[in-house]
Length: 273
Image (cartoon, rainbow, N blue to C red; front, side):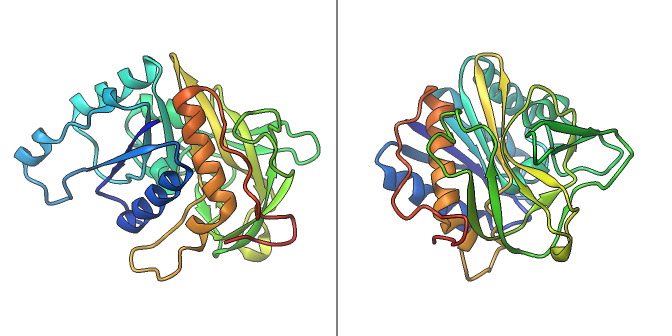
């Protein structure tokens, strides 16, 4: 499965994140991974004009980018790729980008935005139903302190989640809350309770979700935090995150999942790194 990782700008440690994700995907034996690194903030006009990721040569595009807008030809090529059946998987801060790109906001459904940007979506823990908070009400995007937390699988029949335990303990990470956007056509695959003791909201926040677009699909997961210079890679080396990433890429690229749930997958009581 041909995967293209897009990086080059991020308020997080994009180089270390790309290295970790590339190693995870390569270890499955199911992927060939290429990286396209955009010009930095000081990139020249010529450098940006020359940067044209070859989306059409791949089956999946993994987003590890959070920075200035892409050139319009790149935006158009990305949308055409997904509309034509390509898959996309956006990781952690990748959903922070492009607040002014209307189509992007539809693709990600929810992003790191202020409370006035759009609706907020949370999850009813008992029923699994999506709960909407109107634009302007409630908190905007944020997170409490980094900590380990339980992830609850909501779509047990979905190929990405099939066979995973209902509850599994994710390693130390940022638990995003108050994400905002159109929130349309999204299927929430997993959620996590945002503990007020850790600076959270006291509600179940979406963790991984899917949005169909044209013939393709976009998977967003807010797991996978890593700062530049951070010495540990707990969030990225969590076996739960690695499994979700690999299965999301396989499903987005092919529509099926063959990668098994590995031995040593986290339990509801213990992380696995």
